[in-house]
Image (cartoon, rainbow, N blue to C red; front, side):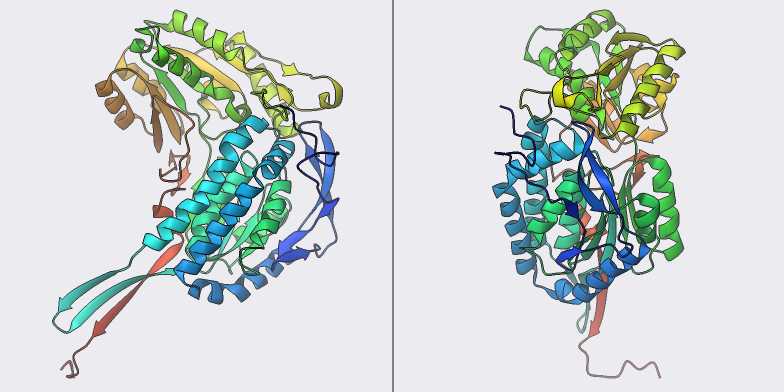
Length: 506
């Protein structure tokens, strides 16, 4: 099936010509009356204008958030939970519209937005709506007349900055726990992919009081920095590349506020020799796991961009893996048969192509891909790259540096210890994959790898009930899982004496 392009007859999506900021439950023009063109990577052509905000607009959004925070923070957990469930239902009712929009704005295949991005985003709101209802404080009797109460309170107003690779899903990861915990939010989307968030904000306005969710669009230095360093927020959460994350942490430290950073990765995907022991479903599952480097065009912070294969099976495995991966070719992202879409922007396209050139110059062998792909018709100006497989060694730049594209670098290992040594030989520690039929090996490898999430005999699963976050240069804190309510709350202790008699100190 092929979905109609937005703003054409029969399309699921009809965009406005221009999107302002969404503040206090309504669209508000940017103070400086500046806008920028929003380009679809599918065609390389603009399809709407979006507010180019400044510090003045951030302050307006913070005014709205602070005006709403007391009432929202005191709203009962039942009401807040119901609001999130209503929002999830609205998203589900508009699933195709949001999925097509995400594809048009980001370039990813609609088969992924329909099957993964939107269902996961919806589930996160439902999950935290449930977690909220189950949350309890604590009480301890210190003596017969003295009791200690521990209560959870919202932080107040938080700032959130999301990336362009999973725009709506990353928004859901942050918004669901923050809103559930009783906070008001000022959200800054990535300037490359702002459109779907605006459609989402319109739906959210039907469920949330004005000022609870505010969206300020614009560029990082002009809108993201004034938000992150603002003294009127009580927490900042950021997902993006590591160098920017360092700046966000610096801003937060100046104001002594907590920070959550989900940053880059260079994830190893380890295939032990026994994966080829039998020609069965598990073998095919492992080969599929190799090809996961092309999911979302490789624009995933946990992309399995390093494949480490036991030397005992190296040649055979790589031949089979490349043969299978070759079936994934770039095509029209609005076609449900397409497995690989467009890169999110021309800048990202150029970055990926530059790394492919670096790999070739380093002496890495190209086993598949290695070039830009030009499609016909309206897609001729889109940003497409052929999924690329390099052979080399772990010291090459294409093994060590995050490319954020459909590129995997493959090397062999000799024994368990060598596999772990190569896997951990990186600045990052966000994700990893382990493939083996032996559960002893699986457990040992999972514990030995320095990464916040280790997929075992699977990859690219992101359930709401599993904590996600990195070791080393991959970030601080976690996303998803019920623990995130704690990340958006502070603990109030009431130490209460029920004894009418004087304490006797003075």
